[in-house]
Image (cartoon, rainbow, N blue to C red):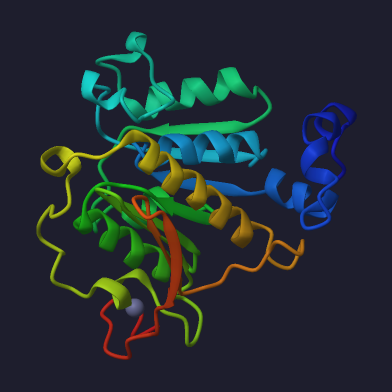
Length: 256
Ligand SMILES: [Zn+2]
């Protein structure tokens, strides 16, 4: 694949980066990322993935845009109130870069439909708001052999990691959190509150982490750091990294 002149101009600041270069930019143009959740994490993540020229985006979210979302969900405006988030977010992408392919999926991901919704993606970026969906997404990624960028935020604590539970010796998201959260929505931010700029930092860090995985073996930046969980403390502020190891008894990847 050779990028046409107008795309070379658009991504000039990427291409001059030795860590990314033309080969990395082509890898991004050929990539297909499925985003789970177009909310506080998903909005900035999809903006930076679209800005980075990720060629195909599938946006999955069954919510509609509410007034309380506008404090942090940066792709939406007052004109989007009442619209399905997946469709409003897809319209943002189309207006931003008409060359990109974008699919809106206004559906709720469950264990039953996750693999079908995520099939075909080179990477899944999960920024949804509940554990049950996260675990369904993780299990589907292991089954499909698809890398997963997982991002979450609670108050001023953020977590971002790349998982490759389909690979030997690498952990999946379920290895990290276990099975206790399959049933319930445990971590909605409605009760706890959340600062918009904090989820923005986590969302853009998730986009950077996804780009590392998408450019693996194509660019120097392409070190996915599988199983390294980056913990962002927005109050200190600070960043530290821990290693998640594979759980041999994991229901998600133990049989893989
Ligand atoms: Zn696992």
